[in-house]
Length: 480
Length: 96
Image (cartoon, rainbow over all chains, first blue to last red; front, side, top):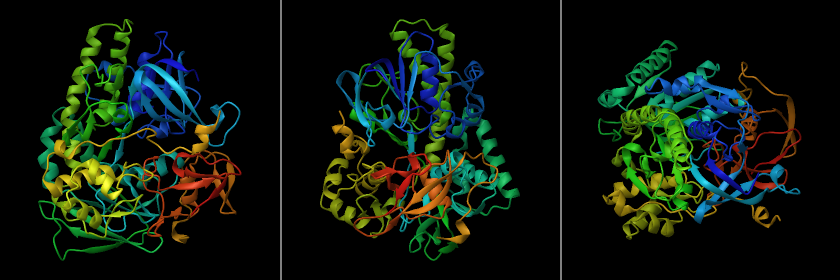
């Protein structure tokens, strides 16, 4: 690793890989930093197991000029020898971004001079910086959601994709996310059992959202095919049902549900109990905005794009000069948008550097593809969205902040006292000050604030993050 | 440990070389390429730590280095994320 690079890319998911490949071959020194043991992010994790080479997407993907599905992206990925000028560092965490794009990075042991089991710190200067930090899942908390065996939909998939291990022999699937059916099919493919899929959305809501899939008609078909194959496999599928409690002593053994009315409110007297050894649950996605916020990038709030997203111009440059953003952090819309934006951001950087990148026609195609993704973004985020009434209805004994163990009752009390902004409520309750630094509870807390106070997102305020944005041992700072 | 939940390894998956981990002093089989959190789950170990205030058990939650619920001590270094660490032969892991 060097101390300075022409371009530093943070994150090697779909957007990061697409950007790195577009930047390669122009005589630039490019550094790709990723905190995972392997590249690929969440979508491609199973396909990026080789660590020595690099990957590229089949060029036909963008030549078609049409909307790209996740499936196509996965299929078109292929291993290539690492292009000249690209350096990849894994299990490294960017902890802070300082003026003039100076990065503070925690790197693992093998890359440290001498040896240090805790790793060491490095300062790296980026001529241009591209943030492609992706997204995480979001949740509607319920009693017992902290019990071992209750996990995110993504966690259940990751166990299978990365390690070839089922989440449990029998898995119950719940929430609002389109990941539900994907996970169920993956479990069945691997000879596990799906106890049931409990979808909070009523069929009518899903039907009502279909017109948003204007350029993505094939996705409706894909969804229907998935449902059909689940029906053939006799998977129990219920709609308009919410998990209200996970029960068990040391791990989950039972799950309680309630039926929902058309507005998403629980109907009294409709509770049912499922026996379960694992519950996979999720309510959509939230962009990983910690680093861009810490770097000073302006945000916008847009529920149709997944909440607080990084503000970018047409060239994908953020409000901070020479800092670019691509993929889920500019709006949750899946792998297709990440692919297109990774390419576009790289082309913008190449143009600024005075490198010729071929005919404009190519860029125009990408811009058109990017626009087409907006309808899908609205569809996806509205599908996952939970009504405000669901946040109001959370019982006082439910933990909201898992790290600091802060209950809904405590949050209600502090909101009633007048702590009604993101910043003041965090200070009043310690919600978001634990190990995860609010990555799980902050989007929940924000929705609770909107629901309980009736304020606008701007009145409530965007979250703030300071370096180091991830936990790191003190020993790493002390290492020479 | 829940007997019904052991042997979760998917038969059709490609596995690396068989290795042995020491989990709380007990030998535990794993395979190269598996993350620590998955290897522990496959052995039926689901409680990875105890929450400080309420004393509640905690285990895998996000699986992708976000939630910090799966932190364990690895080779003497505390607070390592089991989900972001690949298992290696002879690795010493302490839960709780």
